[in-house]
Amino acid sequence: MRTQISPERHRSPFFRPSFPALFLAFCMMFSAMGFAQDEATPEAKRAEAAEALAGILTGEEGQGFKDPLDRDTPSSSAQAYLQAAEQGDFERAAKYLDFRNLPPAVRDLSHSELAENLYLVVSRTIWLDPGRLSDTPMGNINDGLPSYLELAGEIHVGEDVTQLLMQNVPADEPGEFIWKVSNATVAEIPRLYEEYGYPRWVEEFRQKFPSGISFLGVELFKWTILLAVFVVLWPLLWLVFFGLTRLISSPGSGLYPDIRKVLTRPLPILIVVVVMGQMLRELGMGATAQRLFEGRTLGTFIVVWLLFGVIDLVRAVRRERFIARGRDDAAVLGRPMANALKLMIALLGVLVWLSNMGVNISALLAGLGVGGVALALALQKPIEDLFGAITLYSQRPVVTGDVCRYGTHFGRVEEIGLRSTRIRTQGNTVVSVPNSRLAYEDIENISARRNVWYRPLIRMRIDTTPDQIQDIVLRMRQMLIDDERVLNDVLRVQFRQFGEYSLDIQVHSYVDTVDFNEYLQIAEELNFRILRIIHEAGAHLAMPERGGGISAV
Image 1 (tube, rainbow, N blue to C red):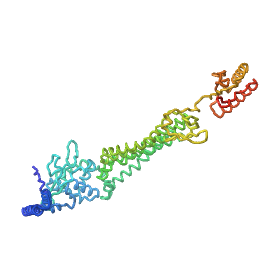
Image 2 (image 1 turned 30 degrees about the vertical axis):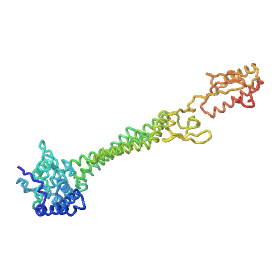
Image 3 (image 1 turned 90 degrees about the horizontal axis):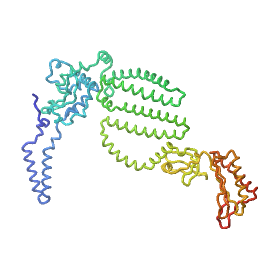
Image 4 (image 1 turned 120 degrees about the horizontal axis):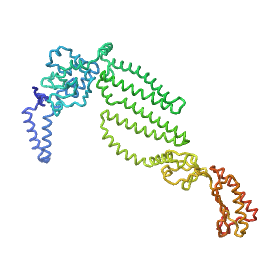
């Protein structure tokens, strides 16, 4: 049965307070209280005395035992062992193993060889994370194990489980204790190595390289194998995906560059990284490489790169569809939307990477939430304009080149941007209207009409005879009917009303054109014809009375 070691074992007898020291401390406490009776309160006297007593009791104890090999705690001992093993210094790594009371079959084996074999087994089976071990000399006293033992990990051999234990053992200094890999674990190293040792061909290949040369805790022979896998696998995958690209699309297609970018760049690299990572797991990784592997830094970067390529491909597909429909302006909207998605994916990738590296992202997200609210308030108007642009591109109330009327503004749309829409007015000025207003208020799209409304109001003098009015109406109606540019479906020419100073004839018709400049030319010709009809009838247009009231058209 193991004996439980008291916490007092960590304290050197030389620094234990003696009875004279205690007596001296109490004398100083009472003398201090006596001298300061007239100058301080009782609470201050007791505090000063207690501080003096604590200084005597702990003044020299802080200079306790410090192991030169950093074996004071389970965490520091495991960390130092892994560092020595990664550097290939197994003579030094053996000093972190307990070789006492070993079985005869293990007792005669080389200590450095046992340390190297244990490192190989650990690198191929578990992630020995010193950060999860206790960093106090007492160890973890709440793990259900004796106080002198701490569990670093478990290694499965078939249905059996071998515990990797750290043990508090006597140091070279009398009365001091240090942490080493337990002798019970050391006794299991030959059996573990027989199960998890390298195959013969790997071992033979390993012997051809000098020992002790490593990078990120990965030996030179492993890097050589990984490099060979990359050299063979990468060109093969590139050729396969290049052929797949030619099957899916042709070089003359507008989508070909984006398809080739996705299939021949991030996708084969991702497959190569996955294969190399799995092979490195089989060969064994050091602690540094394990930390990087658990962070999945390279894999996260490649996945984000792949998603960026997929977004660009989807954007290219939608751009081709919009262009085929004649909606070049809507194709422009794909870039900002794609950039917004890329930004979200990049932020998500960073959060996933930080989580894999052991960072508590809950507190980070809470801080980002507060900052996000402030940022959202600051960007409220720009975001409204962005969604207004999306509405304009999707609903298409106006497009670039359309003539429209918005509020008091009338002109041609020159550009629909992400922030505002530029409208060139009839006065050749440019009005920039925020998209948030333009998207949710009334817009009259002049260019969307199928024909142009021609409706002049003709005001004749009040002394015009009925025969003249009837003759003018009939001849005007016939003139419009005979003109092929005027639609006859809703053509009306009527003696409309008796004005205060005029007799009003109303024309209601449509000119078969959507070009406003062409309409102006046709309307001018029709107006001249109407003037000739009035002149031939011997009538006159109404003139405004002095003081206003009637306006000639």
